[in-house]
Length: 456
Image (cartoon, rainbow, N blue to C red; front, top):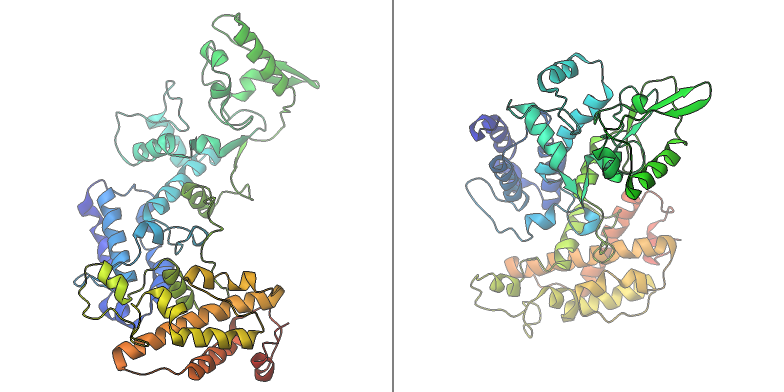
C-alpha cells in the first residue's frame, strides 16, 4: 500500500460521493456536514491498517476542499479560506474538519494499544516471532530488515511527537504483577521511561529489557530491589540517582493481577481514537479565546457565514479586487458612496446602520457604534445582558448579519432594493422560529414576548 495506484478504490469512492448535483444543491453548511459525517470516515478501512502516502492524503483533501467551496473535479472554485485554517478546531478558529493524516495516524496508534493490551492474542505472538529482538528498545519490536505494514506503524509510534512528547509519554503502564511492563523502557513510574529519567543507571544496567518483576520483589510484606549492574554505582550522580529511584520504588506495590495500560491524556483513562486525534492535534491555542464564537441555536449556515465575515473571506467587491478579479465598480450597491467591504456592508452603510438601531431598540441594549465585524461579535459581551438573554442576543446578531448579506446579494443579482423595516421583520421572525425549535435550554415564549425580547 505504499504505492499510490493501490489507493485508487478510495479515491474513486470519494469522487462518487462528491457528485456534481450534491455540490450544487447543498449549502456550505450541508457540504461541511457531509464532509464530517461521510467523507471523513470513508477511508477508515484502509487508514486503520495502512499508512497512506502523502500524495494520497493530498489528493483526497483536494477533493474535500473543492467540494467544500462548491467546486467539482472538473470545475474549481475559489477557496476563500486556507485548508490549514479550515482543519483547525472550532475553538481555534477553524471548521473542525480533522486532517486525514491525523485520522490515519490515530487509527494506527490503536494497533499499538492492542499490542500492549492483548499479550496472548495470536496476531501479537506472530508479530513478536517475526520482529522480536533482544536489541529492540522501542515501544514495540521491529525488525528493520523486514518491510511492510508493521514496520511503517512502529516507525510512526517511535518517531511521532507532539510538542516534544512521544507516545511513551501518553501511554502509561499500570503495574500489577510486573510480568509484562519493562522496568527501564516503558513509561510506568512518572511521566517518562526510567531510562530517560535516570540515564546514568540505565547505562550500567546489564539487562536493558528487564521487567518490573525482575527488579522489584515483594515477599511477606517486604519490598526488595534486585539490581543487576555491570558494575556497582560509584559516581556521585549514580549514587544520587539510585537513592532517588529506590525512594520512588518504595511507593510501588505489586498485586496479584496482570499488568495493564492506560491512556494518560484527557479526562478518561480509557483508550479512544477521538482522544488520540485530540492529542495529535496538539494543545488548544492560547489565543483560542480571541475570535468568533459560534452560536449553538442558530443554523450552521449562519455560523459559517459569520466565521467567514470575521476572517474577511466573503466575496465583496473589495475582496474580489484584492484577488485580481476585475470589478468595474467598487462602490456599494446600496448607498453608492463608499467602497464595498465587509465592514461597510455590515456596519457602515445606511441600511445596516438602520438595522442596528432597530435591533438595539428591540433588544433593549444601548446603541452600539460598530466599525468592524469584530465589534459585532462582541456586542453581546458589552451590552450588559446576562444569562439566556446574552446567549440569545449573540444569535440575533449573527442572524442580522446573515440577513444583511442576503439583502446585499438580492440587490447585486436581482436589483431588489431592501427596506430596513422588512429586514428587521425578517430577523425577528427567523429568530423566533429558530429559537423555538433549536434553543434547548430557553424558556417558552410566544410571539408577543419575543417581540418585546422577553426571553428571561
